[in-house]
Image 1: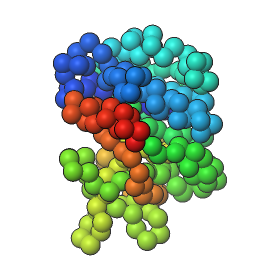
Image 2: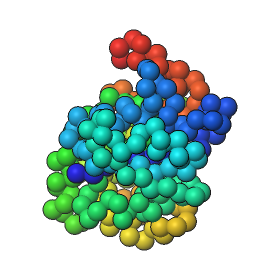
Image 3: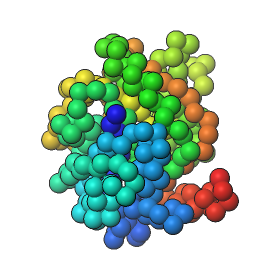
Image 4: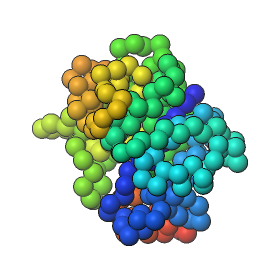
Length: 232
């Protein structure tokens, strides 16, 4: 089983910290933020990892190496300029193989158990009609993007009247086919591809209510460190 960690963002809202340190390497509880993901993926039995990078990407490779110290194997998908989320994943497809794979945003902090996605990956491998699966969260008290929802059959959809609005948690499973129409060498955001798959009822979802932070600002980086200090 393979997973991709998205680590190519510039981290503009984290400046000046990210002027000299790529956002995935910012310290949370005494280790880089991205290492929390690597350790949790290894514990879930997902040891074949792909990490994309752009801004200060060489620092990411120098720090993480081939991943052997965490019991994983890391390969890198460098981007000369950031390709946004869908573009970055499409660019990395040659490294991700033919089976469904996990994708985790490198700038979240969560206690989600990635092992829960193993049966999802197995199901998607057998069901060609399902090309994606999203982990959704109750809305946070700060802006987090388009409101989504889950219908009664477990399919993801754009939130409408009467729906409980949810936020994409930055944790998902995709098949390579999900990105078949995404150019591999130009920026492409993820939302339009989400909406296309949702309209075709090709994307399922689950709701997670545990610990989760979008570590996108200096204040939320401090909040992540507070969680670690408090044992949260």
